[in-house]
Length: 297
Image 1: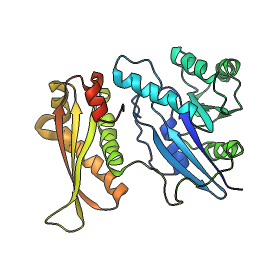
Image 2 (image 1 turned 180 degrees about the vertical axis):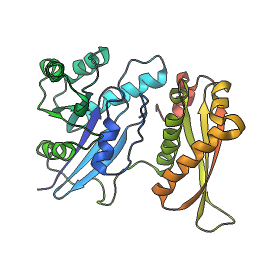
Image 3 (image 1 turned 135 degrees about the vertical axis):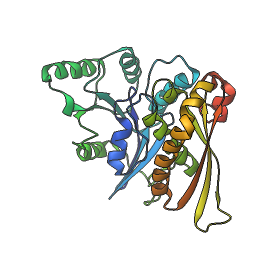
Image 4 (image 1 turned 45 degrees about the horizontal axis):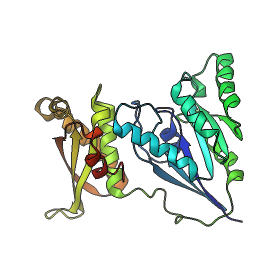
């Protein structure tokens, strides 16, 4: 009997959802950074094993947002609860219980789908009684089918959780070829790797205000086996553009150098990466641009 199913990973920003998915897949499927709200799209990681296939959906962090972009990200994350076979709700052992937790739990109460509570970052906890009380609060709110403690960063109990999820999967066909690990388009994966470097290299308002779009990818006319990739980095203010370019172009060069290494590993081909910074004022609140960038239909 072949088993297959869809498993959504939901939780607040920065609890380690993408880190865990990358650990499961043993390669970078979702970008990561220490900045909250790193994941903006629902990204699928396809895990193959003998006799089954798990399709993990990495969702944006659920949070209270002041922008239409953030509100739509939360809406999209919660929408996955109604169309999957298993809900994996991840929390951080180092976090405090807050309104976002309550909002998620109130939604989970009404979901008939099997629910698994995953406590991540357990390796960072020293006050065990506090952790036990923290976990009990979630267990009192929702009748979880399984509760597991892990460390996604260190890989602790990552494989154990995979095995624990198998019994929840229904009988079904393989939805994807065995050599496919994600269904994200190439352009999206490239743009995300550029955005990841921006998140890691910049501070303050830049990470939340930035968007990256790949304008085109084409073979170089002069050099064989070289791809020209032209991408736009979009921000909301002129001051942000100045920060991203940096003195004498230093910052944009650092972003390009680090992103180029990741894209080279992704494509396995030599590339020329051309980055430009554009200003679109308040794009996160404008429906036209959110549609243009694929955040709303």
